[in-house]
Length: 590
Image (cartoon, rainbow, N blue to C red):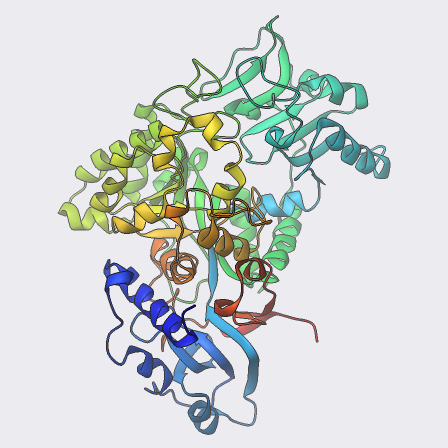
């Protein structure tokens, strides 16, 4: 068992290597790097507003650890020894936050999230973890009894992969997608619309299908599928773009505001100082700006507009300028290439192993995808493209390569656009080096791997797993790896992502050796993915993502030292405080 000191040196080596593209196992930390963090003082002009004392992991490869950090206003003014900062920067109004055995890390940011979706899901029926159709209906009945005259019954989180293996799909192995039969029997008059856990399929009862005027004659929309029975009638499940056929209740700006505030409170309590919000529409953008104006946005939200808005008037304007203090920026656009693996909508190069003849769907045609990329790049928008299957990933890399080659300024100017691929779950291994060649960021979610691992091989076959959820392969190729959760697809807690990244196990520790264990990350690499690399992926690495003098004071504080916890304890590690721009925006109740 390595000593605590040797573990600290390994963490330092991993951080330095991640910044320089070196292999941490072969590179020792630079001489004096730890000493600089411990005793090499970086002085600020006091007194400080806040001094945090304890172990401080800065995520700065040159000075990765300190004993204390001093904050004045919204910025870090000093890092160094606890005694020096206390003796020199403590004034009458300075608050001392003593971690008492805990640890502080550079503020954790979820690099792919949906606050608006989380806020909605906190209000509707939670179907996550349901192990049968019967359990889904029991949960819906409980809510329907509370709101007998409330119209639509809405829920999210069902996953047929968790249901009894007794129902096998006629299309192939594995649990079948549900049909409207049981849902219609339970709710014959009220329309019910239930979003799958991944957000890429919806399950409707007969009343909802009638509301949408979906019949056997309704054609599949481009980029979507209406699942049908042998007679051609809709079974009740709509995949990807077909979900837009469902006329769910309209959401007002007041609804959006309420939901965003609830989601913000939920995320701050779990240690997140910021999120990259994917798929923002015009109304949500206006609400975010109102929250900033009213002083109610307490975390950082780096926004990516939805592709429908890009195709309209958004494509005629410039993105928000990136400033250090901004709480909300609309700086990028979110494009969809394909659907999700769980609903067999991810676009594959060869058919699904458990649905012969079916290779998923492309949400956008290749021509349309290129048009949208050109439109975004012409106005300076950063692009983040959802791509899960190996065909989708190859297509977006090809599209990016062609679009970047057409830009003025040469390869380096093109690389600085920092284009992103969201999820990058299944790739031909030969395509992974192309991310580094093009300067494309892999924005991935560790808990997706541990959620999908029970059925991924059945769906893909063993051969395709070589490029599945391949975090280590990306890092070994020198690719920037930003990490998130895709909440509410997964739970919000960043500690769940850290745990999944270092173990590739489920919450019970299965499988014992970890799934595709050669792709595990070190804890330092996982922390970097949620901090320094998330900042890089948002063009905010000059003021966020690490604890350096002059940087924004965004800090996540844990009750315990998470570097010394067993993996299962890390997964549930409690938060002591969440600090954004020097303000303690959440703290463990005393």
